[in-house]
Length: 284
Image (cartoon, rainbow, N blue to C red; front, side, top):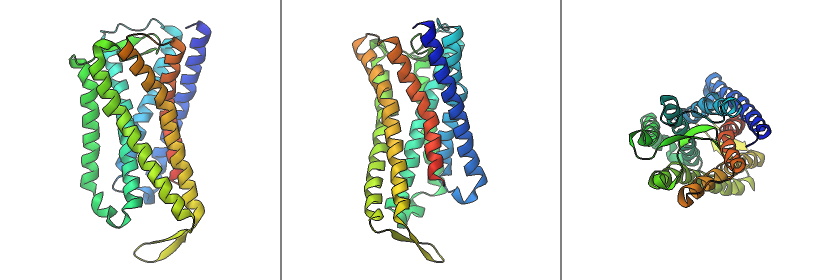
């Protein structure tokens, strides 16, 4: 990649980093300052927000710095490269899994409203959160013990999993269970919720609590549908190129063009910024 393209890449990474940090700090502040927005499952939203915030403070600026000052990268076997590769994989996986479980929570609240409080108790919410992070830590630790490997990618300007035929089993497991499955689940649940919201939008509805019932106008459901569609589109647009590039390199043993590879990583990391801003829209 030429010096000019590396400069553009660094600028894009820095812009995404600023948007990611600001968006996730705003989301955390909204949850912190508004007690009525908190629930037994708020920890799931906090989990993916913290993961995205950490990506905005680590992977994004590191990629920008490396592309400008050290395009040849770091020794793959070094502690720094292995540690940053572990952190990169951990945060990506925890972000997408936490977002998926937050979507499951929203789906349960809409589609099983009468039994929602019995399904999502504080204990179950904490158990799900613990299971998510345990899975993500174990998944990211596998390359450190020889199942897969971390190495510096000159076309991504990051230490990340090595996508090659020798790591085929690890890459396929991570892509399928760590990335593709939660994305398909999230988009499917959002699709069903949009279908439900469209039916409600035709007539509006009444929502009741312990004291009274009140009418919810149709535009509330329509706004929620727009947010859900935007989230699904963001996930598919940002993750599909990255998944395709990783699978192509792993299964074929050939490398993709540097520009294609770099843009796919930038899109994935940019999703960390978009998630927070879209989620903030749902909290209003």
